[in-house]
Image (cartoon, rainbow, N blue to C red; front, side):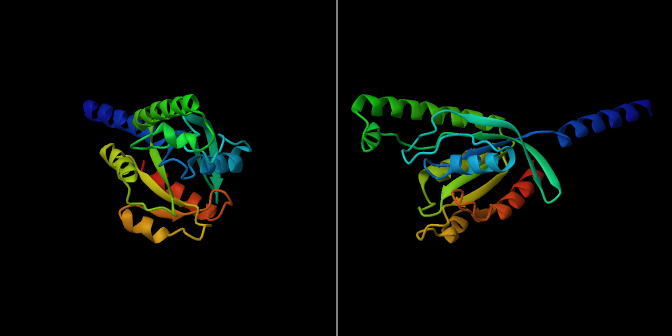
Length: 213
């Protein structure tokens, strides 16, 4: 009888620890220039008044992990606290010559390519610390890419809850249905991080995602 009581007590304690986790680590992953930083900035601006990182048209502008802790989202009477983690864009190949198209000299381009490669390695390492991940894809581009499949594969292997965001739906070439068809097993939400379109629906999806943790 005493042993049973002790076991039940331990069970309640550990259950309370995991269910009562105060802050969830929410990672933003995806290919370069899909809008990860733009979305992270909008969330942080909405709830903290401060942006997280710099946005640029140059690929791999985010080359290091950047994060903001204790981003508290209070939406429709529900509250959640997140550690927002913005990661460098994932790519299967980085060619320094691509950076030279943005008026960089060879030395600068090679340095940028090296930093981008290191950033990708760090992004994958940080997956082990994520409670949930938002995969941000450019809704104007083909979702059936090796990069996207690689990202999703890593998340599946780690059993990390996923929400897929099709960004840039404000553009004419955007086709959210292609993203939905590519990843039918996941919830897909279309937004425009730049203009804040569909952010209410996005926040509702984030709360559903948190329940899976």
